[in-house]
Image (cartoon, rainbow, N blue to C red; front, side, top):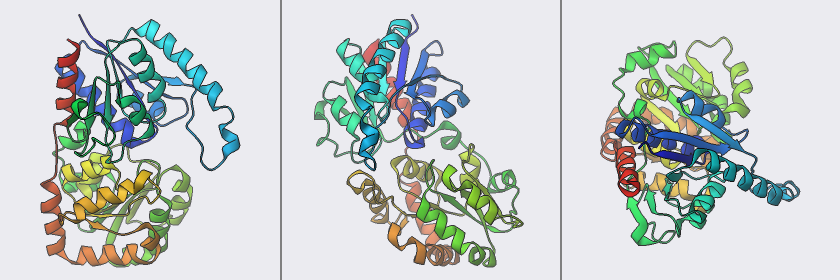
Length: 363
């Protein structure tokens, strides 16, 4: 009989894309498996999950707002409402298992599963566990982690270190550099810089590229620039009339962007690190300084120590980002060293390992 599985969580690409990779791996093992995503209304998953061919239901839930305490007054009511919505979803869908990928929308779904004795699985991509995952880990059936050393957050006997699932279109990509560059209507003869600040953008990176754009173009560098929604309009105006730049709020087909790139500037969230390792690209990381326990710096430093990436602190980006990247692009030997060393860290089958383990434990 076909299994029915709920995948809960989201908020950012770092949660959504591994979830989609796991869903595809489950379907690959057993095509009859029914999968339902549950996320938060108004968040990124409500758009990206249907685009990947899966059904998603949204909860009326919000996370804790650290910048405006008054906005948290309605949280208890939203949490109660979300539990009622989850109860109705469970009654209707009757899941055999639930997988949480992080983000506040995963909490009521996995709590409900654990209360009902339904097997619950967690995937924690970061080196520092998120709040929802930490609270849920004790009663989880299994906890899949992107890195080792996670016993400080989860019961050791429940942990399986799998690495982080990378989207199949990236992991299995055979695109040539020229195909990638043509996708963005750019010139294969020019050196290409890919700039990604995460799925929601990164202000310090965006402002640094904005200020240094003419300098980059004068060096013969063309730019593929994912801005995130908040900076999209500013970037659009900035590149008006310039031929050697592509800018947009989101790149839907990242496999083309990675294929096109000679060098990458990026935040160092766990999933970005995983994707760049698989893509095998020289990268300058600019860690987001306000991530929990500064885990993005931890992620980046792990690669820097292996001579697999460069790192620049966020507060130095405005003065040094563009000059650092130009210096790297002039140093072909350094680029080759970074490319070779980051490729050694690639994990291509995390989604399959997770999917097999889930089926093993619910059959």
